[in-house]
Image (cartoon, rainbow, N blue to C red):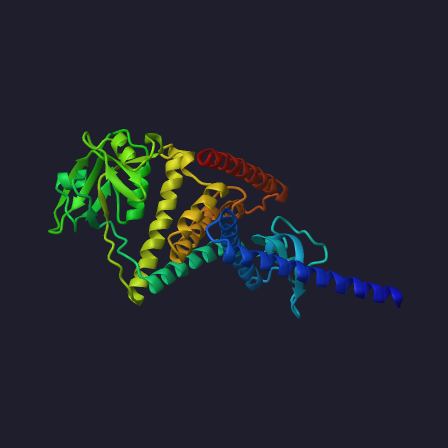
Length: 413
């Protein structure tokens, strides 16, 4: 009797400790968000919250499809690290947990890499489900990330309104190469350096790719429907306080720096054609749907262009950002308002979905590849062999992340 009482007291103390820990974590996050805006710790907390939400949504996709397909799920967790709280619902074997560190989450399905519990029935293992069900479970996380991104983009446009996303020219810098070439407001860019263009997102990525020529080649569709090819040499501009100042023989970089009380080395210099998108803000339900669809497809296709350019060498690894680079981006984005933070969430959600669908070991797409191999050969792949491939893939990903993070640190300091 005394042992049972001690066990009960110990359990109550453990629960109380978990609740206190959870409340302290929530209080810390709230204090940082409310009282320390736009500081380094605020940026870190916001970035962690964004990544946690997006990873949790991704894992939620695996969880929902796993449940629908009858797979036993050991645990569905929000956060990582030590368990703070946990509970089970009636007639549900899954343990739902809240963990101490706000860094993502996970869904632990039975039989992801072979039968891993002798007490479970055979049909409760994911590995024993039909190939279609296994593929659906694997891609469900990516699907949830895409749905989340679309909803966020729709919400941005519905609440704040958005401008046109097509490659129609809505602004031309005075005395810029574009104006001198005869391009006018209302023209539409349909091709850049031999690649078809429909949105400004894609145009920006093409312009960032390595180009052996000192000019940019555009195909412009005029308002009368005629198309014309232009070869335009960009001019150099000094970027100071979000203002672009053209560098000329009379208005040199040294003179611009002196006028703004800066050293020449402190001034950022970029090459520009001198064109921009239409900034007229539109509102309404239909505009929000149009914006969400165009923006989603634009970001989605741009991701694959970036991946392809990295493989071919047209884009260097220095163009990528790791956790440190993302931390810097959060601060910059947040300074422009909450709508931009939500946009960053949508962008990262699509990013997470695209990366996970790639047919590379350790990603969901890599696991789908093994299911397809099994379907073709009519033989199950040895779980140990598959596990080795995923482990190697994970190590390579971690090495890449370390390299990118190192590059981010060098850029900051």
